[in-house]
Image (cartoon, rainbow, N blue to C red; front, top):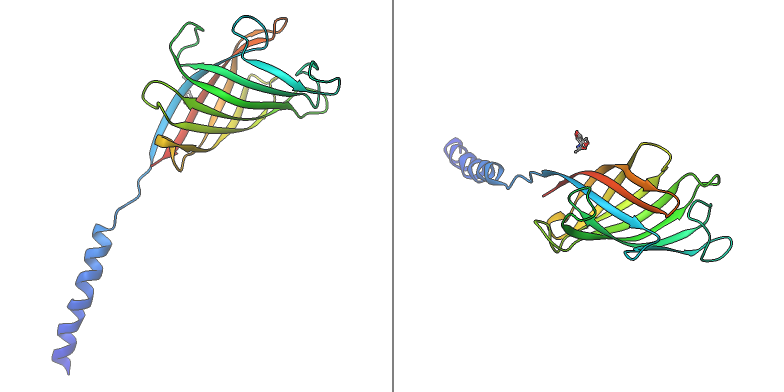
Length: 176
Ligand SMILES: *[C@@H]1O[C@H](CO)[C@@H](O)[C@H](O)[C@H]1NC(C)=O
């Protein structure tokens, strides 16, 4: 009886220990990305338009309830002439009664560079009167499957009269 026990314990324990040591450990990668979004409501390179609001589609985005659709160029540098790596496509809606904050939901669709073909899904509040606004990165595709993260948004350039802005997105994400 005792001889059998001494034989069966290693027979069970060894496969379990082997499985524990060789089980693949899911280690995440952390990636930091600094992107610039060029959002223009006027000009030849117009990339955004208001589509609905309290006075119809022409209502200013500065008014509560205005919805804006955008397909903005995304570059790695702040200069509008720097290499385009993707597009920021989605919408903003002015969602603060006093008009001083937007709710945004958009995809960054990478069309060039290291992340070509991948996307990041961005969602959150943009109280644009603040210098730094933190937003969330809720998901992604391609290189960014299972992504989670956050970003800091700052306005690098603003021409309020012509409604043109360059927004810096400093994104930190964890993915596999
Ligand atoms: C980006 O944000 C991180 C904090 O999340 C900060 O440490 C880093 O300096 C920022 N980089 C740039 C280029 O702004």
